[in-house]
Image (cartoon, rainbow, N blue to C red; front, side, top):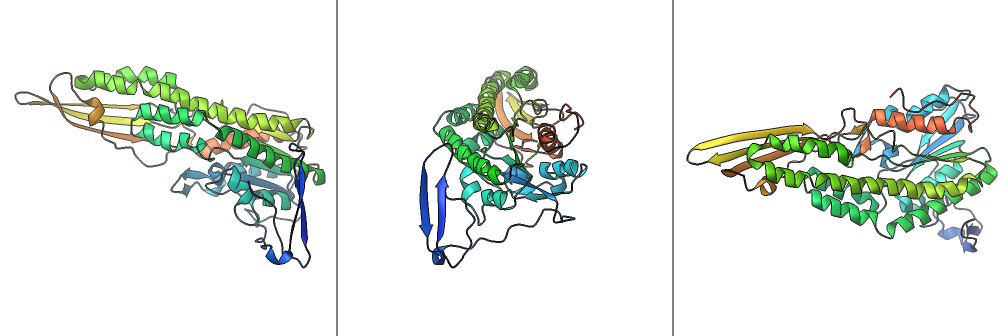
Length: 391
């Protein structure tokens, strides 16, 4: 991770004290002003503020915060993003509040502290916010594979490859790097609280966009039975999906556990001004759709051709995950061959509705989770309620 400070050119030598409470070590870095790169101006608020005296809310992080629908990229409307939906709740309290959504797609922990001038971390410092929300970590190298490479494997019905992909994400040194990077980022927020003692920081975890292994396993027999002449080969392939989903679920849990472990270290020392927001449970019954249709034609000598089709949604009936709008069409011919009787002569598939980013309802739940967790610390006199009940 590179230095995150927002440089400005002056006629004197800049001296920066670099260190962290967790590391204990400090070093002094000096650089002539002539070599410093001037930072761009701080961003304007997402919506015009009614007054300069408004309390500031900075929403930073990755493509989830940006409101991505997919990695093309295309985006939800700004009003659907969780930062804007949270702002609406904040503005209903004594305020006023202003939102600065500094997120970019994609962003990992390195880019958060090093990309652009000022960086996202620098903006969160220089804007002197009352509230910071941070969604970060899923787009880190290797970790991101569980929603990119493994996701593509599932869409192509390459379920064994999806499981191997997820196992590769589950194991490796990238988790140590995530812990180290998050510790540095949150430590800088902790230092920031010295000059801004009312600052509240809410770090969100992630949801599992995939359906549960149990729900899929119960659907496989009926789905394959409709194909009649290719029941065994269909069943063999599709029973490989539940184990892959188990591993993918373990990846999401490990991602959340890793982030939470870092946040927990800062809660006590900040007098409870750090919060970990875990959306995992709320999204359990609101995963992506996974609408699959397979069409087959089987030749039965001497002159009969049977067509057998099957269609099923293996996903959730009330999804909070936005479809990426890119259908899977990889031919299932290879894995459906051979037919029990006759000769398989044609096999096609279409897989629709899959996605990895929250839709407007998912963002509404994220906003409510942050709201319910932080409102007391923000001085908002409202009794606690169960989050996401009105999504």
